[in-house]
Image 1 (tube, one colour):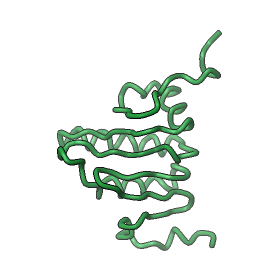
Image 2 (cartoon, helix red, strand yellow; image 1 turned 135 degrees about the vertical axis):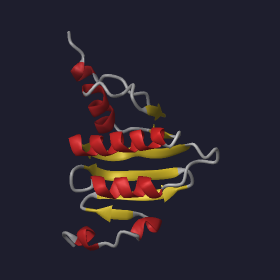
Image 3 (cartoon, helix red, strand yellow; image 1 turned 90 degrees about the vertical axis):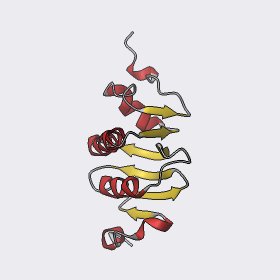
Length: 131
């Protein structure tokens, strides 16, 4: 059903919200994103992260990005906003298992060192390394 995600209620975060190609599923200490993170879907992620409960220490919110197959500048902006909000609250946003698409964008923009990354190491893909 095309466009069905646009009519979902804002309080649909409990069982995994979906908007035009992105689903966000909460778990204890954070949430997992699956699909495309772009201008249309970034608000879904932003809302899910705003509602996420920190881990047991009450400090970190984990965002699992293993199943994000596309991310653009709007998605990156949503990650940066969440990172800054977490820091402002004396917390931390942890990016867990960033997909190749996410890793590549973090490297291309030189933002890999800005984020706390857990799981798969973020390193420059071979096609970005100058010869």
